[in-house]
Amino acid sequence: MRQPRITPKRETVQWLSTLLLLLIPFVQVGGESLLRLDAPSRTLYFFGEAIRIEEFYLLLLITLIFVFIFIFITMIFGRVWCGWFCPQTTVTDLAESFDRQIVRFFGNNKVVSVAGQNLCAALLSLLVASNLIWYFIPPAEYLNRIMSGNLGLVAGISLVSVGTVVWADLMFLRRYFCKAICPYGRIQLMAMDASTLTLEFDPAEAGRCITCHACERVCPTGIDIKKGFQVECINCGRCVDACRSVLNRLAQPGIIHYTFGRRSDGGGKPVTTRSLLLASIIMVLTVILAFGVAHRSEATIKVSRGGDGTVRRMPDGAVVNFYTTYLENRSRSAAVYDITVAGVAGHRVELLGPTRRISVAANENRRVDFMVKVSPAPVTAEMLKFRLMRAGQPVAEAKMTLLVK
Ligand code: SF4
Ligand code: SF4
Image (cartoon, rainbow, N blue to C red; front, side, top):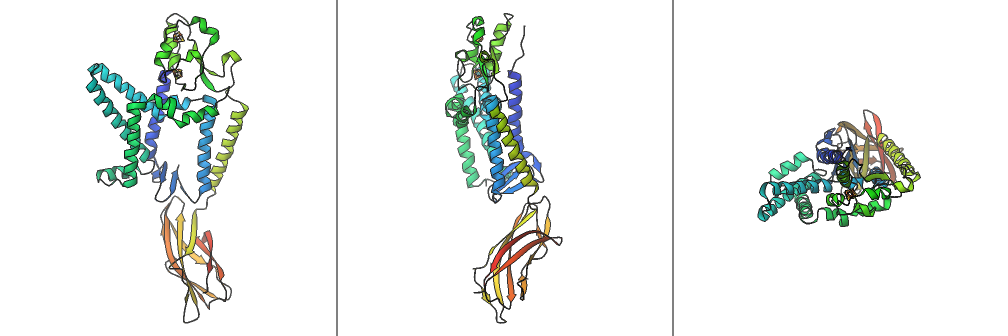
């Protein structure tokens, strides 16, 4: 009798998900990373869309969707993120495998072992810290900055601090981090219920246990699953494989298995009212996000008072106000815009400055300074309506007061 092993499947998932996290910053859509937060311009590049901090509701929706997806996955599959996807688990697995290779080639030489562990931890921590920074600075720019010795203060501090934390984690904490420190591990417990996927040592089969302790020896978090569900379990399935490999040799099936809820209680169902409710919320939020992204205006105009805010009265009786404008081209291609202003009834309104044929690159937020001259000057302040035109069609508008004194 030979039951299939879970470890190869888990390792494939682990490698693919880690590779995905490493490669996402290198994947470009419309000349930008698939997912990157550009701090200086306060812009999130998200699957080809440039979402600025001003579009807070979209950022909030994206964050909420990610949070609910994590809760949803945890509710159904328990700590499967920890055992099958988490980069911390993957780098720890790598470090442990490196330790084994050192022992294999150099025996129990303490000096070589410590030097090797430090080297491995340093390389992995450099990679992890760099990978994190690539979600803020594109990898090519990051490399250029490193080569020219001009990484920048914030990026430099981030690289050193994240690198140091990961190095310390790999040298001193490893699985203890998952067991006792990781805040996400604690939060997950709140999302789990009686139907969540867990590992079970079937009490009805306990008589077949030969007390070989193989399941305990392979457990990365050091628990004994025979004592029942424990919060430290990361659903990795190593104990399932260990038990199967022992009992299969005795022509028996393993005793430990994955289960949605306890088998002794009749087994739970992966889909519950709670999970369906959560799935519905995720779907509704996703539809709202898709609608919001699809119906974003292709450009925006923001007008504020410019110069030193003073109002000029001209000898011919006209009044001049200064304005600063930011034009944002949210489309995926460069565009040429004109700014127009709606007239004040009975007065001549002129725009003075570079308000015609303004080229704005895709995703660029461009500043334009100009003046508005109204003659004769109105007696009281008037509201001006500015329009951003593309190919003669209005694409955005903004209002600003014309002061007369
Ligand atoms: S009890 Fe089994 S599934 Fe849970 S962490 Fe230990 S080896 Fe992995
Ligand atoms: S590996 Fe299986 S047989 Fe061995 S102690 Fe664990 S549960 Fe019992």
